Length: 79
Image 1 (tube, rainbow, N blue to C red):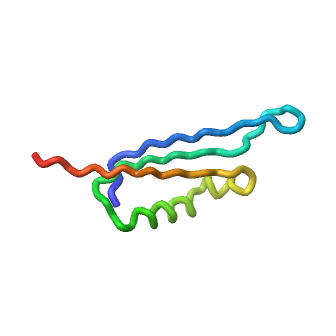
Image 2: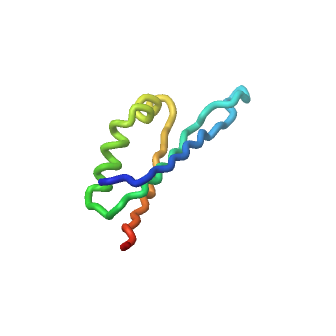
Image 3: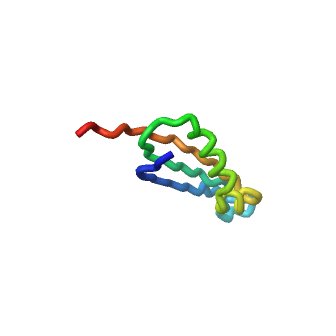
């Protein structure tokens, strides 16, 4: 799968704890790859990436991380 471009956004949801101090409740991540064509392997690639993502797998034991990957497929325009 060829990724033409990629945008990402990560938002930390911060809430006060019992003492009123701010704490990260969860992190919401949105990754938007722009692909050159549709593929039956896209879902598998997303699952493999998330499993091997160093950041997600390192912090998930302490903070829930929700990942969304709404990919976009664009076809090459004929010249």
